[in-house]
Image 1: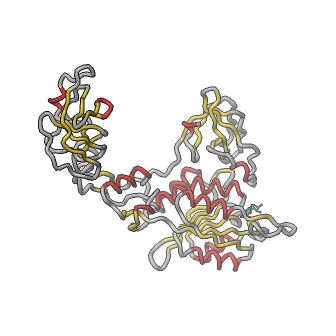
Image 2 (image 1 turned 120 degrees about the horizontal axis):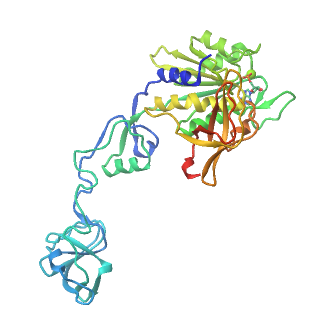
Image 3 (image 1 turned 45 degrees about the vertical axis):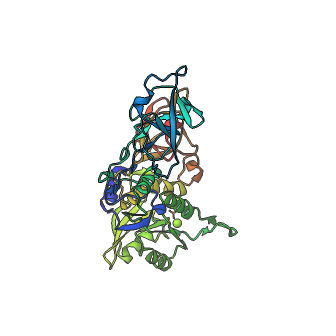
Amino acid sequence: MISIERARKLILSECEPLPAETLPLSAVLGRVLCSPAVADVDIPPFDNSAMDGYAVRAADTVGALPGSPVSLRIVDTIAAGRVGTVEVMPGCAAKIMTGAPMPRGADAVVESEATREATGAVEVVRTVARRENVRPKGEDSAVGSVVLDEGHVLGPAEIGVLASIGRREVRVFGRPSVSILATGSELVEPGSPLAPGQIRNSNSYTAEAQCRELGLEPARLGIARDDYQVTVDLMRSGLSGDILITSGGVSVGEFDFVKQAQDDLGVQRRLWRVAMKPGKPLSFGVFERPDGRRCLVFGVPGNPAAAMVSFELFIRPAVLRMMGRQAVARPEQRAVLAQDESPTADWVRVVRMHVSRDAGLLMAYSTGAQGSGRLRSMVGANALAFVPPGRRLLAGEEVAVLVLGEDLAEV
Ligand code: AMP
Ligand code: MG
């Protein structure tokens, strides 16, 4: 049995960024750039006004005050998108809108608020400095400069930058195709009535949603009843993608066929069992396809909280690495335990926590009963805490928690 950290390292050592693909700008949110993006024009491409106002010669405004304004003759009106044709000579001004190109002759913009318009003229009531309210050509990005490095994760701002340099398509690392298979003869899909002894399949849906949060479009392969051949056949169909996730059937029960099916399908097991609770019976292996690509095969335990925690700790980092991300870890935070947490003798307990701010302190509250089968222990969990084997953690103690989703700084 190996530690959580070693298991994660081992899994990541098998993860390579997927081959690049070219996608339209609207489809790259969350993807990773696989070559630097270079500006092919200056951004902005020309000197332009930062304000609605008047383009002037700064020297003309020297000494202007509300009580003794400078009057300038209006020679043009320049809307955004239009290039003014009249040169601004001494004693003159051009009415100008935000984003419109600076006209020849003018070297500053005085904002409308510091002017009074008279017929055919404008009265300026303050001195403006040269270049004031002028956004110089290339101030955001100069032509030829790298605006985003390779490896950059594309969020809304990055996508906007790519649009501003004229990119319609972007080359990004691929995203893994994922198949999800539930195993268990007791399982039925939501929507079907329960016969005696049956429960609903929830793992496929939590795993699907966890994948979707990462921008994936996973396929649910349904439910394999606890039958060796059925398990083999359904698992085989999942090996054509980049990741296969099975849940259940990976422990030591008499009807647990997942490991045997992995072996017989040619999946090379890299690990089985991690020293943690929930999630101990995790298995992980690699399937080399005849086409030279590989499918990573995760067998997560059937208990719903165990399945979710396993995804969070192991599958999520693997997915992100395959999408080209270097940083794949969730952020850590220090928080004060609101209650004692008892250890197990041999395994790290992974406790689902709700962290909230209480009198200025980040407090970690257990989400409630923590049995591996208690799916609701994940509801409202925004952090995971780790109780080392054999050491009781005490209320009031500060511990490191792994932050899930929302930023605790905002709590
Ligand atoms: P297993 O890992 O197959 O021994 O299953 C452990 C526990 O998780 C059992 O109580 C199963 O009924 C339950 N379980 C297994 N698969 C699922 C699933 N897809 N959805 C909800 N519960 C499940
Ligand atoms: Mg089972």
